Image: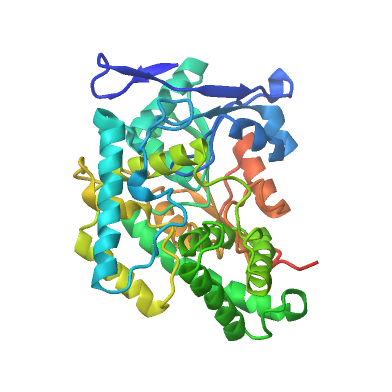
Length: 439
């Protein structure tokens, strides 16, 4: 479908939004309408997600809803944004991602400016219009094109931010909306800082977990010994990258693994193999970081974040890095994408509005120890959505909960809301499975 590039100028230039649909399998009496889905990011493609996520949904939801995916503007097949080299982001091995000392700090800020300049050159005049607010209006156009009176929505991670933005703009058109792994109602840069501290807590949990399975992993029987092995691996790759895999690539692998406990064993095995054999095959992701899809994802991620609100000042970025290093001298800063907004050519004066007291009750879902979207974000956003309820999966450490963790309490509560409109009388606490076992 086509929509205005700028919804405030509906007669101006237009762009295409790619939409996919998998129809409900139930009877006409079971049908509840269309369920739009978004996988997160910003930058995640929703076209395949309509298929992959639907396959995991409870059967009652699959029977009740057409599952509708779409590529948000700037992503995939919807006017994809291209930031070119992005300040050398895709160079391998990358430069040291944690600046220490004045020279490294200047280089760090310089790379952020180069990234912003590359996006300005690549995206040009569309930069201000790839915001979440504009995408929320695209969602309403999809609703209208489908002939639906209200928008039913399942948004995960960034998708929760998008859903909250839709509720702020169109509270009277909100149907049944599930916000899973919730981004809090903060500036993107503030969120990135909060996430970076949560990652340190999660990494400490990982070290303790690996130590508790010393016979399996062989990195030590106490958390400090495992941490020392981790630091040896990172220092070694920083000093002498292997097959273009250095400190930046190591940190990306750690960032990816920390968010899903099922990836922990692979990360620890990869560290052990590197220390023993000097090889990095176990640490490399299964897909290339510099693939066309990855380049679009990384570009859209920064472009959307910087279009959604004011960026930080450069001095604050360095101060926050110093504060994070005071917590732990070797942090993981991979998720600090909004830092580049300090140098954006277009800097919005306000943050994207999220939530509305006029919206009907929504269902928020969170993992108690998710480091990617800490549970504090769900609690803060719920205050912007009166009457909404929070479903928390206790003793869980992963990102993405509903139709993801295989938890009957979570999945049953959410399915009852989506299919029958049942809003829990109070917040719900579900028992999680705890840290993973090993084989």
